[in-house]
Each structure stands twice: as structure tokens, then as C-alpha cells.
Amino acid sequence: MDEKKIIRQISTVGIAGNVALVAFKMYAGIAGHSPAMVSDAVHSLSDVFATLIAFIGVRLSLKAADEQHPYGHDRMECVASLLLGCILLATGVGIGISGVRTILAGHYDQLAVPSRIALIAAVVSIVVKEAMFWYTRYFAKKLNSSAFMADAWHHRSDALSSVGSLIGIGGAMLGAPVLEPIACVAICLCILKVAYDILKDAVEKMLDTACDEQYEADLGSFIKAQEGVKTLDKLRTRKFGNRIYIDAEIGVDGELRLRDAHAIAERVHNAVEKQYPNIKHIMIHENPA
Image (cartoon, rainbow, N blue to C red; front, side, top):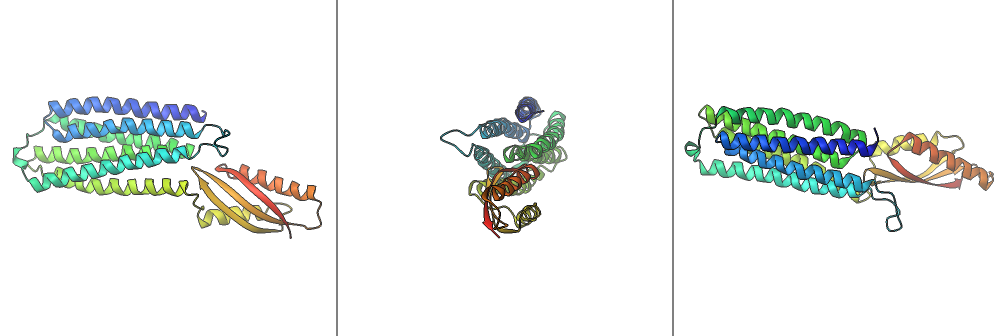
């Protein structure tokens, strides 16, 4: 299956699954007298927009290079990741504020006791959203897509939100409604940590951040092992969206003709791009060793 088909498949599953969950949870929240479940349904609605953002960002990143963008459009996926990170951040803050306000208000005895349908909806939401997290995460890794990975964590945040709803609904049915806002505050902290990681990764990729030391060490060893390479004089790496650009200087026999020295550089170039599929391009300069 090609990349575009996988992208359409992930997006279709994400949007259809969330729309169905929104309808079911909204019904369960209203019929089951559960404000927590109604809030959870609104959270699921935000996931529909999150998946759309991821889909648009990834599709735009696949556009071929043109005169205005000779290096391609890979960073459009970083833009999508930034937007998704901000949505996730806002979601976490919203859940946390709601929990803190409820705790400070303390009017638990005035809340209607939810019915069983709300409890069932919370369990269904946890199972479905967790399944959607692992499904999206699997294909995000296959595509090396930070935007869809962020979307996967958005599904996980919805599952965590439903855990809070489950605890709150169950607590209210057992006479302890204070459990819900406490759970919301704890869930808020988990979501904020994920949002921070997503935003940090997206910013690093937009700032041409170098790859980690281990990656550069492995790449350097691979280049030095190629036939005709005497030394590796310089190696620079930079992240460009989810792809990587490399600038390298290799030392070759100084007595070689230019054509032969160039042939060595060309072989190294092709070998590196074949061995490391996430490298979009490597520029190699030959020095006399």
C-alpha cells in the first residue's frame, strides 16, 4: 500500500470513529444525566479536527519540489504537528481547569447521579480510543510521520479523558463524585507532558537541529567503511521536517583523477541514501587525503 492510500485510510478511520463516538457519548451524557460524558463528547469532537489537520499537513508535505520550494514541502508536517500540539495543550489545560474549579466549588451533592448508560459509554470510549491510538501509532511509525504520531497521542488523551469520566461517573454512582475532578487534574498533567514532547519535536525539526550523537556516529562509520574513502573529514546533519539532510567531506587518494574521485563520492552518496531511507539528500565533497 502506497503512502497516499495509508494516509487516506488513517484519516478515514480517525474521522469516522470520532464522529460515531461523539454521537454515542453525547446521547449517553444527556440521557444518562452526566455532564462529564457531555464534556467527553466535546473532547472527541476536537479529535475530528485534529485528524483533519494531520491529514492536510501530511498530504501537503508530500508535494514535489517546485521553483518557490526547491527543497520540497516536508516542513508542512511540522506545522501540522505544532497545531496538534497546541490543541493537545489546550485540551489538557481545559480538563485541568475544569477539575480544579469543581474541587474548589465543592458542590458535589447537587449533581445528578448518572445512569448506567453513561458508565457504558465511558468504557466503550476508553476501548475504542485506545484501539485508535495503537492503530494510528502503528502507521505513523511506518510513515515516519510526526503529525500522525501527534494525532495518535490525541486519541490517547481522549482515552485518558474517558478514564476520568469513568472514575467520576462510577464515583457519583457510589456516592463519591469528588473522584472525577481529582482524576481530571491527574489526567491534565499527563496530557501536558505529551503536548510538550510533541511541540518540542516539531520546533527542533523546523530549526534544522542536528541528529543525535549516536545517529551521527553510526552514519560516520558507514561512510568511512565505503570503498575508496580514506578519511571522513567533516559530517553535518540537519533535520528537515521528518527527513534529514547531510553535508559530508571525505578524504580520497590525492593522486586519483577527478573523474575517479567523483565516482567514489557518487558511490558513497547512493549507498548512504539506500541504507538510510529517511535521508532526503547527502552532499559530498572530496578532499585529497
